[in-house]
Image (tube, rainbow, N blue to C red; front, top):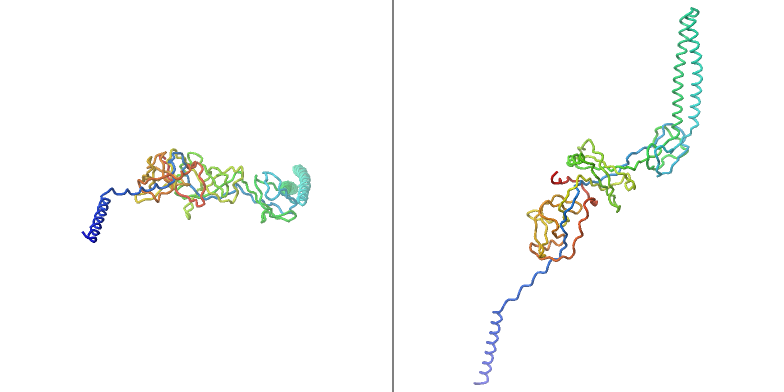
Length: 398
């Protein structure tokens, strides 16, 4: 065999070996597909607790009562016995007017009364004497009648004089102005030394009673039946949330339902009364209001962000013991303040996904990256800047 033939034979043998190795590789076991990584999610436990049935609204704080102080007489303002913004008590002296003209008028009225009383006494004695003379035939009936009429006229004058004296005393009393209520004073609009007129404008000062205090608000007329029904059983609690106040809500009670629905807006006005001992509520403020109609015990509650919308309605992802998720249909009763009350589909103690749902499908493996904080107590809901009134769902069994 020549050199060329030997080289060709070795090359063919090498190709056969390579082909055998390739065929052996193709006939072996295929490589396993990579396992999908668990989806990181946040979860929260399904809670069972008592939650309030509430109506939300925007309210305005109003003084319990307001008095615009005016004078009932004309005169010079001589005394101011408070400072602007002071608290005043009912019956406290707050203004005085110049008394001298009214003291003089009283003395004049008393003098006139004394004079007419003396004249009336003399006229009555004259009439009595003329009566005897008339009966004796000494004087005519015309003379007797004239004396009797004079006595009667002076008696009437005495009555008028007494009324004038009483009026002068009242005018003198009006020189001292007292606060008609307990309250907080506003700006002083007329200062000492000015002449003021009876019932003139501007008034002297405005006084607001702020302990207790009102919060008024309106709700849709659709809520009226529920409000009347629940208020007939017990006093309804109202929470007022003050903007930029971290001390929590102020608690009061519903005490007024307007007697007419506003047909232009389809709403009805309500008022709640607050003791306001710490004066956190101030006339003119706007506050978020939550009117509590009832308490729903043993409610199933989850964070609102756990709810998802699907073609078959709302659902949540429930984390199973093997760390896979199941899409569970739920029936929502109502949602408020970040909490969703579930009527059907969940039980207390289960865990639902609150963040990371977009990457999930039923059966997907999950990994807890963090657990959501427990739901806050539902007795005093937090305010919302975009609070709206809406008809509440009824508590089951009501």
